[in-house]
Image 1 (tube, rainbow, N blue to C red):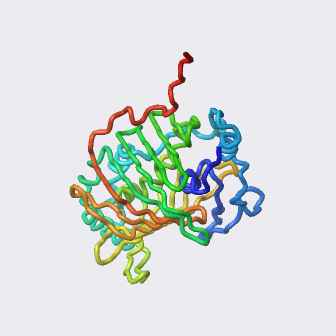
Image 2: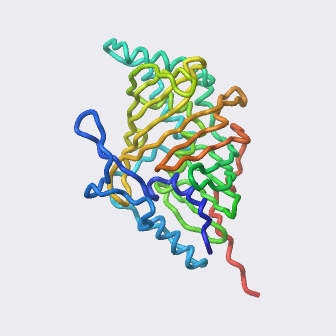
Length: 339
């Protein structure tokens, strides 16, 4: 069984299981590009990590059915969720921080004001937190020197623990499912069992792409850093930091001064990987927005992760429609009974 090259469009979104570039936090204000391990360059084409080993086993043996090796023991895992309810719950708990601050600080007050306007521009806090399930259909096109044909992805979120993502097109047929603490990756006729921890980074990544308004509510620390002109837009920039689950995130939110909507999210996430602990960098640009049921959502996104750039175009978005739990079951076909 041969895996299409554009399967990496899906796999590179799973930072815990793919090959990443790392930076180490500099002692004071700067960061230095280097591998976290022995300060040697990270080879993005090195397929020695567990995830890629499992895929290689699947490719060599179509009948392979196994489980990814247990990740290294670290602090107890309390996932941020990557699902609508978990994301919204955390946001609801922290939404009050927009007005926090015992001591007046002009840069913090300016950031708070910008965030309050952005929340209203994205439909208001109550509307943002009202979503409990969502369906998105969108196309992903890999950009760069060797662009691939677009693939189509259908992603479903339900409640706190249900997630499903279907990717098809250009010889690709991949399905990722999360149901509680159990997950699966099905490529063609082969299914691989995953843990929740292994699926969560993919879910969280997709939510930051498709529901950027939640980012306005989750960061307890923010500071206005100025206005810049970029791509014919005036952007107000707010530096942000805070924990998302057990992962510490720092970065920048850039807002269109004309509409108050979020235009760009740049981030660095501290994360464990097969190569050790390091910082994963990424960027999401929200190029166009649409509206559905009073909720503002991005229709076109430029996503940069692990030195790869993709363009996402949302074809359909639906919120709070009933989703059958059968959609989130183990996709492995039931064994046939010999006659």
